[in-house]
Length: 207
Image (tube, rainbow, N blue to C red; front, top):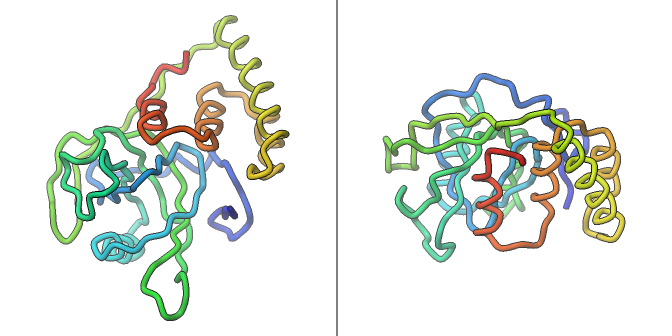
């Protein structure tokens, strides 16, 4: 899996870019079996007609969207009640066609900040919602710092033993100073269920 920053260079985690102004109403992109965490840059394959329209409109604006997971991945055209309440505000970095004879797109997005959907304000041609941005609750006490250092050592070991994780991620982990950022990065690579990934996204207190 290859990831890109918005300058076209390879990258895997970039929390520093996530302070752009995020609107209180965002177009919502539903995802099957995928959770986007703040700071993580990831490519998505987009094929649904409503999602293609959403991406097209977002590229004409500020490229900000909300990304929310589906409770049931088998639903082709989910309504708001069929999505999780928590998601991630994200920015579109890059868009390309899967192939010349396909309408499907590969869209590289970067998660910016957790969000909670307060209410959906539009159903067609794609979902829009009024959202609330969620700040993580953090502290710098000795217990949390100890947990952070232990998690970093475990993360480095996982990277070493996992051929599907780019080794460049190891450098990112070694330079991290935030437990919340590290937890999100680790969660992005864990081989766990959608509901478990969503549970991590909904965890605000990093302790």
